[in-house]
Image (cartoon, rainbow, N blue to C red; front, side, top):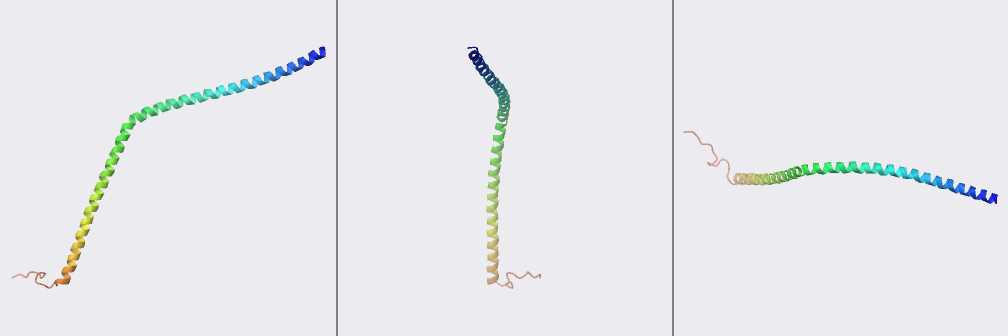
Length: 124
């Protein structure tokens, strides 16, 4: 009977030791997880503060940025219009030069330069 009691006490001691070991490991894991949660909460708080600052800055700069974008779009439109206008003027001048050149070539083919019309005026 004593042996049975000793045997049961040994089993109980082993179970208690295993239980304590499991509890200690769980406690260590809980402490590590609590530390990780605390660090994550600090990171979250820091990020939320930064977001708040950035939102405030964005609200402050938002109208300015939209105004600058609007001005840039207007400037691009104005420059495109000027380029288009200059291209039209250039085309007109090229057409005029071609017409004058064509007219000169036709004139030289039909009217010789020794014609009285092209002779220099003589002084009396």
